[in-house]
Image (tube, rainbow, N blue to C red; front, side):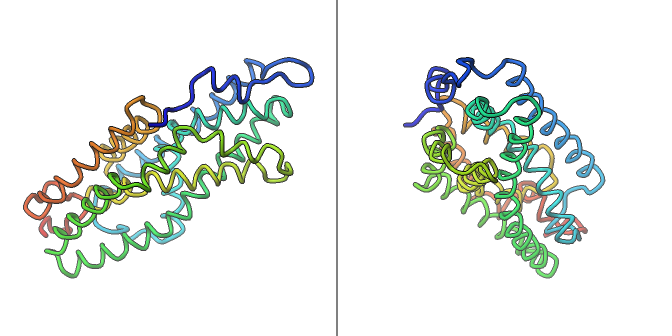
Length: 274
């Protein structure tokens, strides 16, 4: 089992003295953390405010593609930035020998932009899936039970499968792969690094997003619970075991979904039935 890197690993890989012999200044490191925290908090506030006005319903709830993608990216920032923050800050420490102050903040923002670009690409597929399931539920209300069961089944099987754990292993210890970018040309390098890490993160977590089809895309308690699972999977010592437990839970929910309407708030029609 691969663990998330230790502080000693970080020091040995990224905190080597630069030409001046100094490590990344504490002020610059704090600036990186403050930037990430502010973005995540702002994203949660916006997501919560939007959810209050929209409620929980099937499909895209009438949202057009571009507004949906904007809302999706904001929600991904809220859910994902807390778990990817150690990677971003560790990368910032690595580039700290070449940049300082606001220049480092800009490069960190570029890293985050690449990361969210990967989730934006997945957002296109998410929109298509939600539009299809919304159409089916509105036309055939009873299909919601089986759509929900299929979503939980797919998520459960993926959580227990090998591809999930390949991607999770990268998310828990990505620096060895990201190091290959160290000697790349600086132009858009941080964007590429963020996109690389984001692609693995999508591979690790896309199935968890699938359960938002039955639970509701704007179901804030469900979104917060999934964000907590993602955080623990990536950063907790027993994260890989949690991924398997979550997979088993989803398989159980897949069996119960056709008979328990309360498990499917995101697939209920406006009349409340299925």
